[in-house]
Every structure is written in C-alpha cells, then in structure tokens.
Length: 591
Image 1 (cartoon, one colour):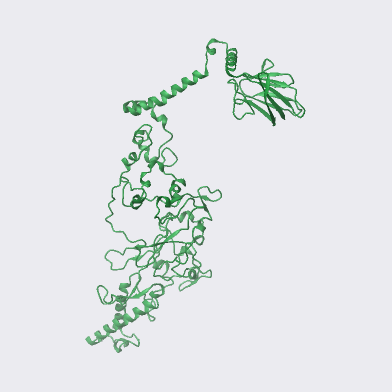
Image 2: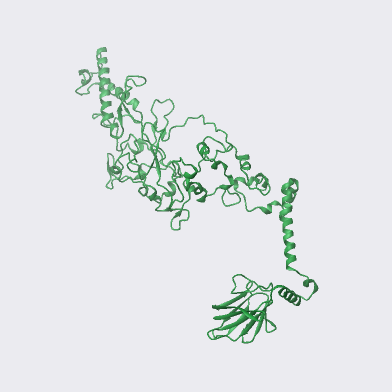
C-alpha cells in the first residue's frame, strides 16, 4: 500500500511524505508512522489498512474513537472527500495520484489554538462541571508531591530521627524499607531491617568502615607486599566487589578481576604476573610449581607449561608411566597379565573427589615390586618407608640365620655353613665370629639392594657422608627423600569430581611419559577444548573466580593488624610428617 501524506499549515502544503507499507499507524507514540501531537490521541490510536479488494479502511485501536464525517466511529471505509479527526488533528482524504493508493491531508493546530481546541473537546466529551475542571497537569503534580512526601521525606526523617524511623517501620509502605532494592544475602539476613548498620549516612554510598565494624578480624583482601607497592588496592570500596541486595554477595563477573589484571604492569611495574583479560582469548599458559631440588622444597619454581626445555621436576624417584600403562598389560607375579589404568593408583582423597590421595607402596606397588632380598628365603622382605632401619634389620636377619647354621654362602665361616647338632653350644669365639660375619655380610647386602636392586630400582640412593657420625654410625647408604609438590597449580582451584566424565589422559599426558621428571599436565589448550571465556556461547562460560580465589593476606587483617602465626608447625608442601616417636625421615606424599 503506497500512501502520500501531506501536512497543511496556514492553508499551504508544508511537507509531503511517501509511505510504502502494508499498514499505516497513527498515534502519539514515537514508533508511529504518523505521529500526532494532540493530548487526546492515544499512543497507538488507529491503523489504516487495505483489504483484498483494494478498499482502504481506518480502524481505531485506542479507547478514544475516531470522529469520522462528524460521527464517532471505530472503523470506516476511506472514500475520496471524507474527513475524520483524532483529537485536534484533522485528516482529509484526497484523490490519490497515479501509482498511489491513498492521499491524506493533515491539518494540526499548534500553540494556543491547539490548547483551546483540546480544552473545548474535553468539555464536550465531559459536560459535567466536575470533569470540566479536571487537569492532567494538576493531577500529575499532586501525585508527584505525594510520592515525595510519603516515600522520600518521611523515610528520610525516620533515618535521621531513629525513634520515628522505628515507628514508621510498623506501617505498611512509608518507611525506609520502601527504598530496599531487594533481599539481602543470607549472611546479613539477621539484621536485614537495620539499614543503618551498613548505610551510615544518608545519600552516601556504603563505606568500608561499615564493613570492618564486623569484619575487622577478616584477613585483608590484599597481601602485605602488594599493599606497599599498589596503594590503589587498599583504597577500593568493599562494595565495588561485594554487591548486596542482589543474586550473590560476591561478584563473579570477569570485569571484577580484569579491571586490574588486563594491564597489571600499569599498577605494578615490577610484577612477574602476565596480563589476563579473558580465559578464552586473553589468558597466558599455565605455570606449574615444581621443585628444582628434591631435598629442598622451600624455593619452588613457577614454570609455564609451554617451556618444555625447563619443565622438569627432580623427585628422586624412577617411574615410567608408559611402561605401566601398556595396552597389552604388565606381568604380575600373582595374577599374570594385568592391564592398569590411572585409577589403579590415583584415588580421590575425599568423598567429594576434589583431590587425589597420596600413593601407598603396600596397596599400589607391592603386588609387583616385592622387597625380597634373599634367594634362599623368597618370602622374607625388607621393610619399606624407613631406610634408617634397613641395615639393622639385615644384621638381625643374618645373625639369626647364622646362629641356626647351614647357611652355605662362600663368604660365610665354617661355623655358619655347618648345621648345629641338637644340644650343641657355640663357644664365645664362634659367637664373635658369627656376629662379625653377620654385620659385614649385612652391609654387603645393604649396599647391593640399595644401589642395584630392590631400593635402587625406584629410588635415588647416595652414599651417606655422615656414616660413622652422629645418629647414623653404621648407615653407609641412604635413600634420598622424595620431592613432590602436592599441588602443581596452587593458585588455582580444580575439582577432579566435576571432571569425572573426562578421561585422565585428556589432561595428563601419562601414556607417553617414560621418566618421573616429566610434568604430565598438557596445558591450557586442553582446558579450552571445553571451557571458553565469560561470553562463550558454544563452550562452558568460565570467569576468573571459577578457578581462582582472591589474593587474601596471610599476615594482615582488614584493619591492618598483624595476624599472629599459628603455633602448630606445618609440614612442607607434599611432605607427610613421620609418626610421633619415630626416627624415620618424613615420607613424601605423591599427588
């Protein structure tokens, strides 16, 4: 339907507009094709449409009808020469030019003339005296004044004068509770009607002092070393990250962290951190924590997973993942061919499956790795887990064997190789000879098992430089302590249970690893197979706080006071302290 709309002012056409649409809308709304300025027109007052036969008709869609040829109407057929009006706007249907379906002339009064005409129309519509005095402007001002008094001035007075505010809260709507934008969090629900606990001053945002009044002993959200170099971190308002009266008290959006970390060197030029803006597109490679010295885990290194030439962890353990994960299986002394997978050794440490438990030799290794050391006594095994007692154990074992006799080793003296007859007693000289031989032979077996078999198969064994001194007078060889970090990514949160639908090898490159120095994590690319940034559409949308906690201070409270260190000694990461009363070295926890 093609229409020509002409606007007439002072008897002349001042504007002509061309429309080509299925329907033409008329009203006071900004979205109407023909926008009317009359107060009596509805936002969407009427529409002009063409029927299948080509006939044009106008239909009112607002309660205020159309005055068509002097008569009130809701729908009429448009004919050449007809006149209709909507409020104070008059329309005349003219003969349409060729190629047009409709031509309308619009005449709309302006200024004083428009107001007088509208008042007259209102008077004609509502002839009674009371309605003639009705004014939309006066009504709007009256309602606005009532709202200001009831919902602003009275609550404000109650905020300033507390007893009056308490009384106002007994009323249904006029207290300061009408300002409440939503429910408070469960942590603050016990004082949800005491607005003054947080809002200390009228028309002033919640200040940090209101938060620290209760949370003064909470650890500071910025570590002490950062406070000294980045003063802006301490000047931020608590409410900039903790949003009350919403879905969550803690912000989870990306901007909370990225506002600083997308250009972190602008705040801290000396920082070693990389810029981070989005996990999917603006996150550096993961850095894993490894120990370059297995006997000293106090100074671990942080190495990106893509720096393969530097990426190794010296653990003092020899272990070949690839050999244990062969598809054809490995040979077990008790069960024949056994096919192992990751779950044979790595089990959840807690019911929630968040972290893995430490490995245990008895349950995970002992079936195949027997600790037998004597060919003539294959069921006898050496103790595991405390190399300090191995030599003592061997001396006791071979002393007992020698006293029984019939131990036919080339190095054994005659009294050891011969079987004792019933009732026969050894002379003091023979006892001394047996003791000396057992001690020497035990040291030989200790050196052999430690260096070349049994212990030496899996552990790094070194000569004890302190042998003959202090607490190890007869301990020539020792097993170096294992050095494993319990957490490779200590600055991130990861829950194995939430990823149990994935294969272990999706994230850990274990099937190709032949050396225990290998770090098996594949890197950020394996995470991005499923996880995207905060705005990801076809992957799991992930923000900073999904994996990272906030950098809280271990040494300062929110008020800046020092936190007293715990009197309980803590073990180094990845090390299990020995039982009380034991002289054993700490036993490593293998993650």
